[in-house]
Length: 149
Image (cartoon, rainbow, N blue to C red; front, top):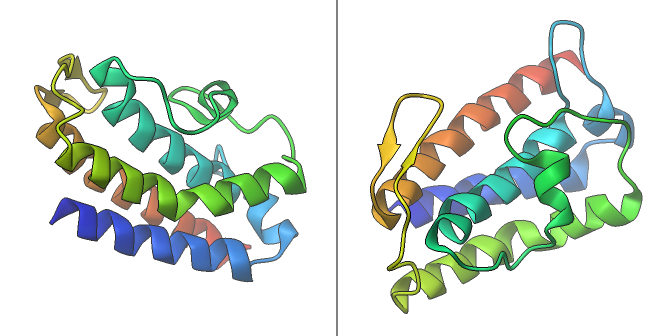
């Protein structure tokens, strides 16, 4: 079920990427620490980190995104149109690939991880469930920013 929730969320995020202006994607409103594009790229890389990295596997997405959009990062300026396109083209396929790899049993060597919210992820199922929660938080941020910009 969590893969369905994540897939639905990704469709919503893709809609934003395809229908919001560059200005809307990159504006950081007063009182916010980030923008819409940062939140979307952060969602993409976090799901990959929670599943592949914590299982000791290489990330299927470009690792440059870890530094730019991983936990603790902040927007450092506008990203290129090419990077926006890369996020856009990986948003849905990444979660589809995670589901395929999950069904293959590739995440057996999951390393327990205490999240900053106080939840400890003990296995891949915990990570997938937590990811849906995490994406919901960032979708809420995106919707709040979208109302302002």
